[in-house]
Length: 129
Image (cartoon, rainbow, N blue to C red):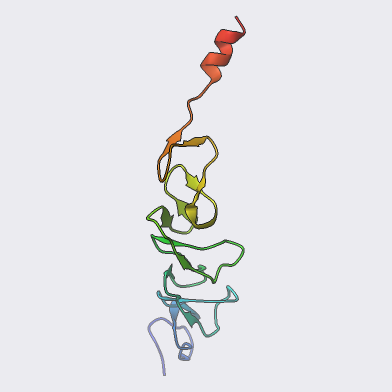
């Protein structure tokens, strides 16, 4: 059998995969490769995760958190501070596990309130005069 995408005889891709390039199968959106390689069977995406497909690793959806050192464990945040995404980000002013810590250069003013610290370089210049 011949395919429009193939220069040679087509071979069916594994379940959860699709043709990515000429003669190369990669993960379909909603699936991921645990080994980060093409031409293998792909696993279904996790609850709370986004899986863009091909060789991209899963990442947390908004309001979910994952530790980059344990990329296949996703946890629902207790608050809406977890913004998710490929960089595993938190709302501004928050960081750490489940986005519950105060980020560097921020101050905490009670539950859920963070304010960026002012740049003190102007104050330091005045003190040296």
